[in-house]
Amino acid sequence: MSLAKFEVCNVRNIKRATVVPSPRVNLIEGENASGKSALLEAIFLLGRGSSFRTSQLNQVINFDADALMVSGQSVQKTGTRVQLGIEIDRQKKKSESPVTQPKADRIWLTHCRFN
Image (cartoon, rainbow, N blue to C red; front, side, top):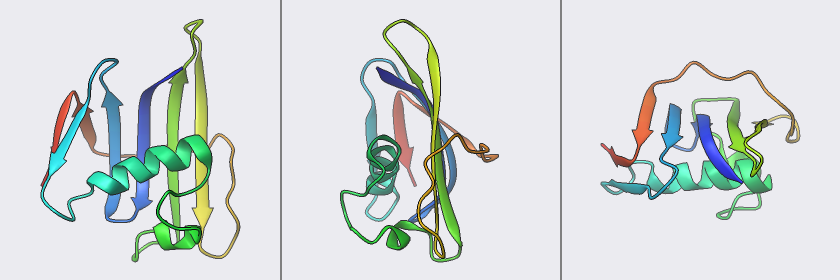
């Protein structure tokens, strides 16, 4: 199983991003506090429904937002695509279901540099 595409909305300092990773190697580089760890945390959230940085999921939500959302497409070994998603609201518990995809800027991630 691999991740073909994912969209991130209000995860830490990432307001909106669409990522289409290469099926091979992906490099993430950037200055301190540019969003590299937030991007990895978003992928972890999508796959595990939890954070590797905190047990308080409301801390992962961007300070200016009330909720975060990560959605993605997983490609199975058979070639079928499965839509995944997680939305976490400050006031409510997490919801793990297919969610509406955010409109986002595109980041093609064969080699991605965060500013």
